[in-house]
Length: 105
Image 1 (spheres, rainbow, N blue to C red):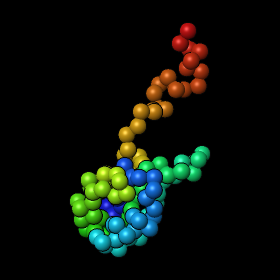
Image 2 (image 1 turned 60 degrees about the horizontal axis):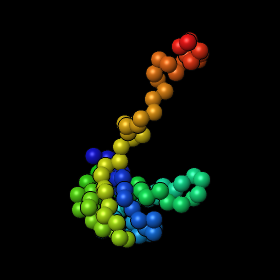
Image 3 (image 1 turned 30 degrees about the vertical axis):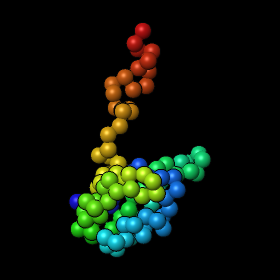
C-alpha cells in the first residue's frame, strides 16, 4: 500500500484543516489536496491525504472508512495512479484515426 489515500463522499464544508485534524491522529500527514472544480472553484467532494509512511496510511484507511465527518459518511481507500483508474472514454479505438468518419460511408 502506498502512503496516499483517496477520501471520497466529503461534505463541501470540509476544509484542509479539518482533514488534517481528523486524519492526523493516525500519523504524520505530509500533504492534503482537496479537489476543486476548475470552472467554479467549488470543492468536488473528494480529497487526497498523504501520510509519512504506508503503515500510517493503512491504519487511517481502516479506521476512517465509513466514519462520518461534517455530516457525510466518508469513503477512504488507497489512492490509485491515474493510469490505473477506469474510464469510459477511450481514444485508442480503430475508428479514432484521422479520416475514419469519412471512410465509413
